Image 1 (cartoon, one colour):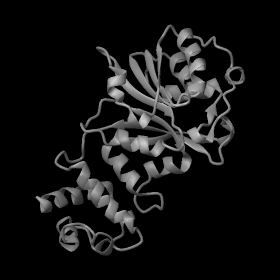
Image 2 (cartoon, rainbow, N blue to C red; image 1 turned 45 degrees about the horizontal axis):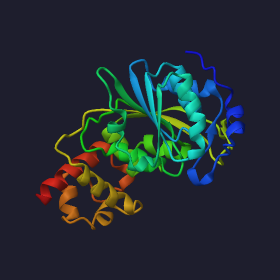
Image 3 (cartoon, rainbow, N blue to C red; image 1 turned 120 degrees about the vertical axis):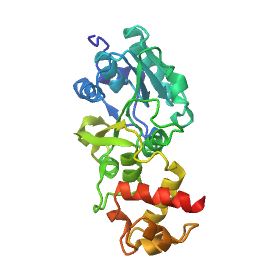
Image 4 (tube, rainbow, N blue to C red; image 1 turned 90 degrees about the horizontal axis):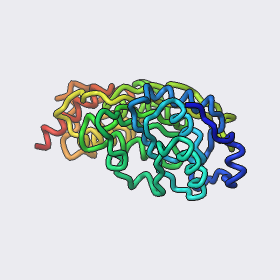
Length: 284
């Protein structure tokens, strides 16, 4: 379908939609770019897309123009609602907009996927809540989750933390959680100049696909606890950083066949999963 709505700069001027720092807003105005992001999300012809913070609708239009069956968007800024209503009208109601806080939403209930629809999340996330939302979607109660993929814009530094490998400075709690839950990659870098207003940092698109758990016996709470302690004092050896656990740290590390003198950034995702499993067994 061809997008016939006026250019985004005209839409922003018409509705006086200056980006607000309080909403973490930086708008993407290049529909060629938003179309490219939409295509990273995959074949959208049978997909219902959940989008957070659509603003004036740049990525929304990219998703719909590239064949998304439906888009359900949550927007806190009521100034954007008239512009989004124009998008919905242009695409025969394929866009549904809910005014509210994405941190409080039951996404699956909002999407209500119909027979054969694949649920995906695609968003230029507001910088001020992006990481919190990503963690929310990684820690849903049932795994594999209700969505087939996440295609998300982050500050480049955050994106690099998500995909970071052991023995790098960026590797940490977010890396372990994301890579435990699925396959993730940086799909595209986005320069600051692509946004209005341009942020002070570059951005990147990550694409995440959930996979089966490495070890289905491991509880999320146990992994989070072990990883939190290990990285809480990341410059210390594990025998010191993990002393705060409610089990004997030396015994735990020995049972997991991990040397006490190692530091958190050297421990692989698979090793953290093993630590979490044994930690759970020791607490039982």
